[in-house]
Structures are given as C-alpha cells and as structure tokens.
Image (cartoon, rainbow, N blue to C red; front, side):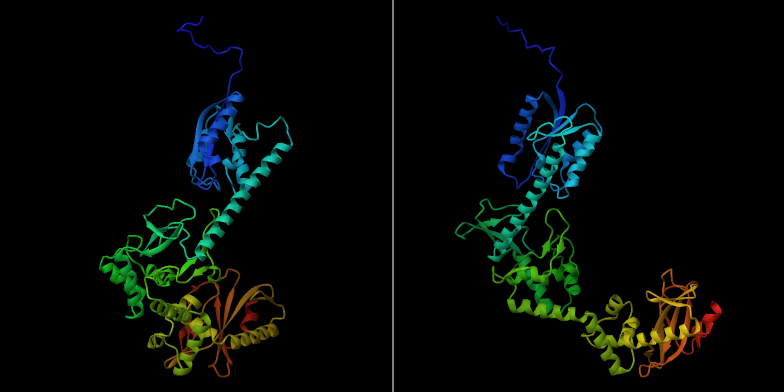
Length: 495
C-alpha cells in the first residue's frame, strides 16, 4: 500500500544521464513546423528517449541563419558555454538548417569543429547520433548543409521575383516609404483600407501597398526643393543651407546636406514612378548599386508629389551638369578655351557657368596643367619615342621595361614630355617627379609651342632631394638652370 510520504527513488543501477545544451532557431521566413516550441518538443523527446539531460536551452527567434551575426543566443552558446564549460558533452539541434543556412557551408562545419575541439559533439536529432566510425555520416551532414544553403538561395530568388512582379504592377514592394510619402494599405479588391504606420506590415498576402502623400510639411519641403533648384536656379548647397537656417528637419532628423538634397532631386518616385531593384544585396551580402538598365520602372504608379514637367527639367539640369564632368567633354571645353584665348588661366574657367571648375579638373586629371598636357598626348608620345632613340644611340644597353627605361642595368629613367602652358606674358613647362621607388630619375622633355613641338631641352629630376609636388619651369628661372640640360650626354657620365 502506498503512503503519502513515499517518494520515487532513483534506480541506483541506472546509468547516469549524459548532459547537453540545446539550440533552437526560427526566422520570419520559416514555416510553422519550424517554430521554436515544435523544435523544443522534438528535441526534448529525443533527449528523453536517449537518456540525455538538457541543462540549458538557447533560442534565437526571428533570426536569419545565413550567418552567425545577429544571433545573440548562438553567440552566447559558442562563447560562454562551448569554449568555457566542461560539464556537458552534447549540443542538440533539430536539424542542420536550424544550426544555420550558411551560404558558405564551410562556416557551418567550422562551428561544429569548434564544438568538437572543446569535446562537445553536435547532434542533429532528426539524423540521430552517428555510429562509431561511420564513414557516411560526415558525407550526409555535408549534403544537408548544402541543401540548407540552397533552400535560402531559392527562397531569396522567389521573394525577389515576387517583389519585382509587385513593383511592375505599380505597388510598393517593401521597406520604409521615401520622405514625403506614406504607405496606404489596399484590400484584395485594391480598395483603400488604412495608412500603415512605421513598422506596420500588411496582414494578408494578397493585400497590396501603395504610396500616397505624407505629412504636409514634408510634401511642401519636397516641392520647395524642386522649385528652388529648377525655377530659382539655386544649387543643392544653397537649398540645404536655407532649409537648415529655417530649422527644417531632414529625412534623418538632422541637418540637410547637399547630398540629401540631390537624392530627393533624383528620386523618380516623386514624379509618380515606381522604381525597384536599384540595389542588390541578397542573403546578407553587402549592397551594391545596379545599373539603370536593371531597374524596374512603372510610370504613373501613384499620385506624384512633383509635377512631371518640373521633375523632368530637374533631370535635364542634372544631366547637363553630369556632362560637364565627363573627361572627354572636359578636355574638349579646355581645348576650346585655349583656342579662343591663346592662353590658360584658372580665372578663364569662371567666365561661363557651362565650363567645369578648376577643382573638377584637379579631381579628374590631377591638376589643370595635367589636363592641358592631355590635349597633346599624341605629340608627347612622339617626343617620348624620339628621346628613347636618342638615349639608345648613346647607351646601347638600354632596355624598355614597362613605361620606363633601364640604362646599362644601372639607372632607371621615366620620360615625361611637357608642352608649354601659355600663361600671360610667359609660358611654363609643368613637370612632376615620378615618385615610384623603382625610378631613379624623371627626365622632363621641354617641347616648343604647340606648332612644331620641337625638343628644346631636358630637365633631370633625381629621385632624392625633391618632393612630389608639381614643378613649373620657365626659360628664365633659376630652377631651369639648375636642372636643365641641353642634350643627353650627361647620361653617359652618370653611368
């Protein structure tokens, strides 16, 4: 007869339980059968059946398995338990996909190897504990890792194609709305339901989302930016300055910058065009811009904030400005300026708003002088070849290597022909020392005025004793007397 004070005593002859920790993961894209409670039930049942005691459970809910970043429970398990504790032997996980859908399957194996290094065995309960020296078990696990990674790739492609289809129909494919817009939820019949607040999502799959005008003050700011840029002719810098002076908050809530203003001016959504696939960054990879021909555009997808004609005029201004900084266009404009005035001064570039700035030439070519030299690349190449022949006639052991010469296996020389830059009453030759460590000497070749391009003399700039800043040589300067040479006989003396 049982008495109330009696308790169930453990069987002394029963073997001690093996201790383990368990890991569960469920992401927003996973099906219901992969929910954490279902995983727990199955893993706990396996543990009970095989005499395993689970001493700690780690759960990452709503976390992607594409990598280990963003999975705090997984990180805690690996760093605080696997590597630092020795009071358990197993790490239980329902299957390989719950461990992670790593796109690099070696990463999945790497985390398992870390467990093994610290004498913890990873057991996928749907597969079971491997038999002793089973040669097929690692092969099967590796195959499951591939399947888990492939599933994510296929799912990502399906999601992307679905978003493209939605965008082609003119609906919002996801993400926060642009500044000045808000999201409007449409029912299955495409009738308006309600405005979605930040963070809210549609509840039914066949519902759709479109864009409508947002807060009136934001809409007014967008229209003001376009009108100031197109009608008043204000630059993006002035527009940003005016907005900041009046305390108008930017889309980020901070101060406006020229880049933020330009981003609004280029955004086709303000003209009512849905644009999708401007960037790519699938499966946790870094985002990168896509070329315009890969963008998905749907005109008149929703009511525009900015008049289509005004938006188009803004694009024409931006395109014209972009052309100003095309290298070929910049050189053509510089040549036209030189042919018109017969000289080259930075101040001449400020005579017309269509001309690129001095800073623009510096960013593209290194300096205005370097851009001017580019106008005569053909003649400079001919002069370089002529100097090569002169050197070979005096130093037979001359080797042309890469873009410099090696003289008698002792001296390396970089040839730099220069056309004189007309600058008022006097011209100058701009030269820049070749700063590569392999170059012993930069040999400047002074050419005559752009008519016959005769070689007038040479400037020998040694590797040491001079910095890399551009130098200007004139026919009467002390610097020219110091480094100038009438011919190339000095090379034989150096050798």
